[in-house]
Image 1 (cartoon, helix red, strand yellow):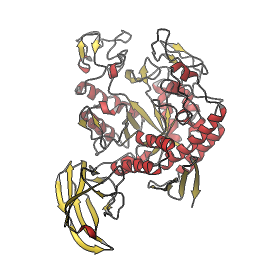
Image 2: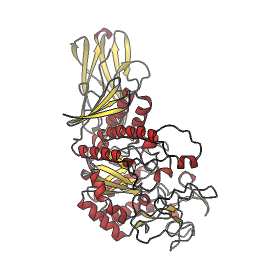
Image 3: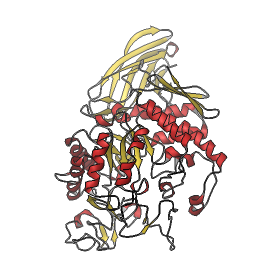
Image 4: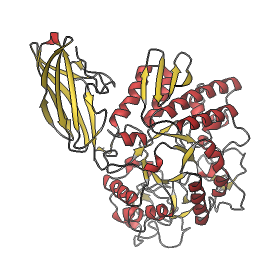
Length: 568
């Protein structure tokens, strides 16, 4: 009955999101037997309006209507079509997540994302492969340094998942350091890596360092500021940029700012209401009851509207300025949903004032439509993030292995491709694992239904199961690399490291236990990815999916989840 498809530029042009002020052309063919006399485009959201399309005439049994609209306000618009015909008034929308039109009541509308025409992403990061390092667990060169608190372990010793009292304190350290990273730069280059994303490197009293003790200092177990400068310099020589983790929603309770345990000089917010840091936090019953992230008392949250803190982070001489001027080329914002719109815009303004610097946010869902704390977020409209971590692609890949539904997979990918500004899509991570997820090889292995964390800690796949899971990782990573965005390797995934949820997914890098076939596969993907143009195309049949990047096409066969890569 209808031929319109928002993902086909014969019917809507240009494809996907548009810069404000862009003319968007619509072509809407209606089956002649409907007897359409008029078609109108109705839109709402960032802008509201109604556009009557022009009737062109009848072509091949369809009455064709066309029109053009200009959207001037950054944000999300939703649209549908109203058809006046001899049958009465009909409405056209879509069913599911594809772009095709159908007639019916209460159907889903199409989405059109409109972004600020000045939106620009970091040039240096385009087309790069990112390697995600969890600093304490990647590589250690012995230098005699030991943590001031907690347990220091030999590299091969098993993780601590809870202390004898049943509490996990994240205070077992393996001593991964800057010197170790420096020795591994040739290895990273062999993978085609062009950027390193470090989980937090600032002073802290935990192994994950998301409880920042001092934003202005490198954690002494990881290295010194001079060593960090050396790392930046050596990375630049190798064509590798460094992205730091900006944890700006909360600090550590054990910090120069809160100073709950009195380990830092000066007076923290916990110690006195006269502390310069007291206005940063929200106390409900001073000093022991205070707002904290997800109720975790070691990470008190900072007030969303605290200008003093925002200036400390993004103001003159602040955290972002210090480390970016030192040579850092990008920032990943932890829990971006927790940061206010004003703060995000202030961070972007600072970052972009310092040069060609990237800004990526931790957002787990479709960032164009994300709602947090009742607020519609504006991450990708040109004034906040360059891109996101793009977990929806990971979800789509895992779902493909589970249900083997090619159309669902393509629709999931194309929804993000259609909703994100082009440059934001290509400056978003394409990932299979992070420090917050089950290791990809474990996720693609068998379901062993282990009830306790201790069981999950000690589990290793039998050899036959491991080989099957490794084959699945090869297919999943091939898809990952062919999708638009920045392929991101979580350290150790490329060698087959196993592990369930945090902290089991944060073991020390398994030196001496690498899977050579899997590693060779990742090196091959890195090599061909360097030849990919930005654009991609994707298609599917009942039992296959194909993704093309330039002269390379990936074919995935759903019957056994195998793949081939052809070079035209």
